[in-house]
Amino acid sequence: MHQHLSSRSVSSPRSRAGRRSVALVLALAGLAGCDRSTSSATASTYNGSFALPGKTQKADATLRASFTTPTAAHLDIVETAKANGATIIRYDVDMTKRLHMIVISDDFTSFQHVHPALDKNGHFTIDLDVPAPGRYLIYADGVPHGLGQQVFRFDVPFGSNTAATPNLGTTPTTVVTGPYAVTLSSLKLDAGETSMLTVKITKAGKPAEDLQPYLGGAGHAVFIGASDDSYIHVHPMAGTDMSSMSMEMGEMKDLPDSAKVDPAMMLHVAVPKAGTYKLWFQFRGGGQLYVAPFVLTAG
Image (cartoon, rainbow, N blue to C red; front, side, top):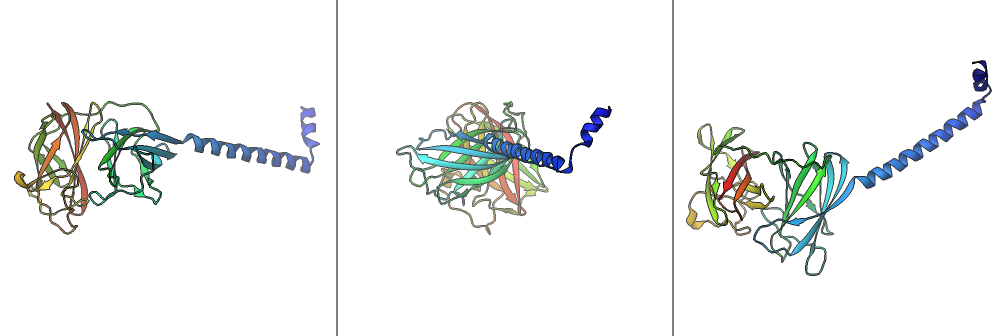
């Protein structure tokens, strides 16, 4: 005991300060090393899978995700032409945007529709937050100039790479979201053919009178196939006069923001095969954006 105390007492203030300085330098060096390894470990690159049924793939796509937290990342997407490998710089505007990004948790419970910014070098970038750890399906839907619509799916883990089973319980034909009730004419689709669904939106039991355009359209409908994650993005036409409607992408003119949207709409949708599909129907009412989810079956 006395020897131990004596050894401590012979240390000079200078030697103690020296040891503290060395320890501090070593600690800072270790932290710097940790920062570098963490930075490299949290940035990952993913190759896109072509996800537009019935169309020809004319580009390739990669996504680089730099994670700042387990549920937040800076995303960078770039597409290259299959013909020559050149980075695609020009994109046509579709429904007021150059790229629509749909982000869905693989259990089909979380849905986001966001729009990355296009840089001069042809890269789309965005900071994305997801609500919980898990695997997410990220769809990049754009129109490279001269190539037509191209859609790519990226399977990206946020904080967890455990796959989840899609939550596809049955839904009624009417779904309430906020003060609105959204009613589909049917939850059945014809596989391999074009199905026509009417959509009616009511408020307080009456046809909604305060609907506004969303991204230049009466609304947006995204269908995802439960068996293969196939992607279909269509836009409803106001009214139910089928003789004058065409739902082909790019054939509709954008609605001005001041336009009044008819609460009765028509969806033309062609699903490639039989199975279960999740639909997220987006619309704007009273200055707010709403989403009505449905589960449909095709046979």
